[in-house]
Length: 239
Image 1 (cartoon, helix red, strand yellow):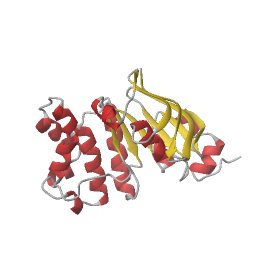
Image 2 (cartoon, helix red, strand yellow):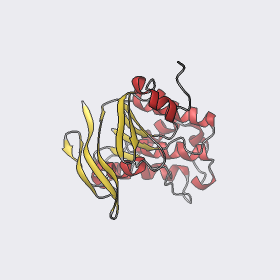
Image 3 (cartoon, one colour):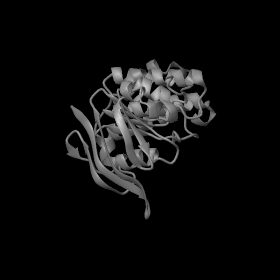
Image 4 (cartoon, one colour):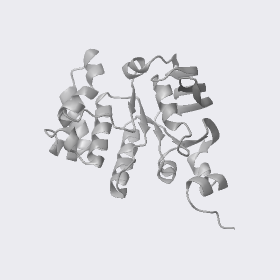
């Protein structure tokens, strides 16, 4: 079943249009990767899909026409931005509680159980639950951003550059968790500068260039495409 459908999406900032007629879809229990060079419009795509930017075209979630960011959150879509957007003066535990705020307003009272699940996935956060988010390392901040998103019990996660600025070992840990999220039934739309890691992890991929979809297909096929190999994977196919 298609969970998210984006059709002919155009968006930008003021009069500057960044995206030009982008279409994509994400199915249930699927990881879809968006790769492309800096300035291609990847983050703009995430923000426009989430309803944080004015847009034209059609965005549908679970066969309903999607509204603004508040509508998306209420219906189970959560964005983890490139900046992490943590409340650095608040504790790890308080940041996690905020991730469940929309659900709490809708009557959910399972916050302790949800937090226990997050701590099971990220034991390091349990060790630092009383620390302020501003004292965490870069990898721990990304763990907290992901954990806060999970507190919202999302059906779909939009992950914008989750590996940005992290050491290779932490990147491997983060991608392992992303795989665990899919195993738990969460669909993921992943924007990632590390094209190799993204294509290894995802089921389907889109290559975004200058605000348009240049290529798309299963990641296994994209990873063997000459243009993708030379431009995004940093190697040349041997003759």
